[in-house]
Length: 163
Image (cartoon, rainbow, N blue to C red):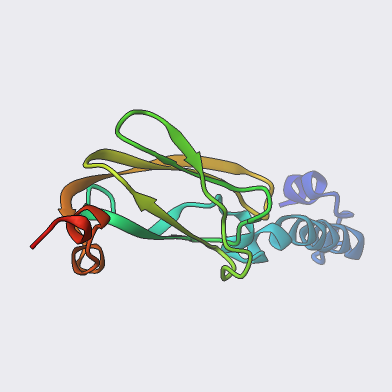
């Protein structure tokens, strides 16, 4: 037992642990807790990259030719001023879309139109508020069928043709 006391730094004949050892160990534990706990207490959204959790149009969706309402929902807030959204047509031509300034936090809202049938893509780049950039593509198919609105509106060639 005496060897154990010597190892722990206790004086001979003492069965109590010196207060200085206990206090320094307690102090070190408190310091470690102060250094390690704050990052764990941050909300998960503050540390997350912007990842799409829902999209309209959905990936690989089949849509008719005509107007296109776009809504990309992310798992964290994004900076709409520094984020981008492009609509890429079947010919490969990209059109930059304006993100609505009144979009809710964490959502990109835009409006566009599809003019031809084929494989289209939404190409997005999002800057999350944690400073990280994420990007991706959402492919979808546009069929040659017109929407109900465009089918109900007569074309100019049909109006000028004699009955």
